[in-house]
Amino acid sequence: MSVTNTYAVTGMTCAHCVQAVTGELTQLPGVHDVTVDLPTGTVTVTSDGPLPVDEVRTAVDEAGYALASADA
Image (tube, rainbow, N blue to C red; front, side, top):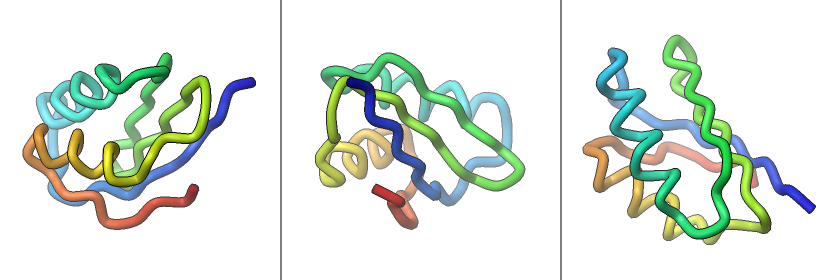
């Protein structure tokens, strides 16, 4: 069963930002789809199961951005 969560990420302004965030999040175990909506700053992640928010926050931080909120 797939789980989809939406996160608000601050600091993304361009296609490079989208690639960086997508690249980091797709490395998390179980993640099979990441969709970034640049105008709204939201990132939708589909995974095999629930993702720990701390792991998502770390991945977003590694990309150089900040996790503002999670709608888990």
